[in-house]
Image (cartoon, rainbow, N blue to C red):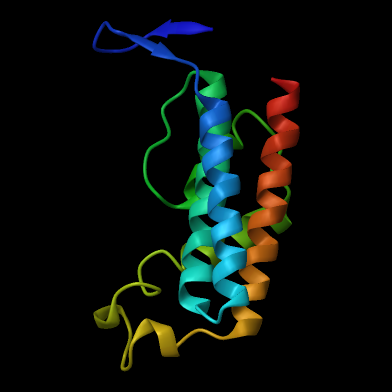
Length: 141
């Protein structure tokens, strides 16, 4: 499926690539969780969820702006019913976008010392659920 881009070129429909990237980020998150890099497991979980939602926009031929999983799902809710639980998961995942990587986003310490195994496990689980939801949507579009 091809579509004309705003600039007049040809854009290929790349939702499979976005979903593959989401799954790759999820695997990265699980690897970091296993090896004690909890901040990176949290960040990669956020990235996995974001890319899965972007895959849905890509399939629809729509632009997805920003990096907030919650905002992207909110925008998607004008086309699909988004379970409230997933919105809650997205809000928590979004909190891992900046502070997991930058010490100045935290009151003290480095990101590596500010995230726990329990938190990382929870965010990996949230990302998995958002990916499954997006896979289901993609199978119906």
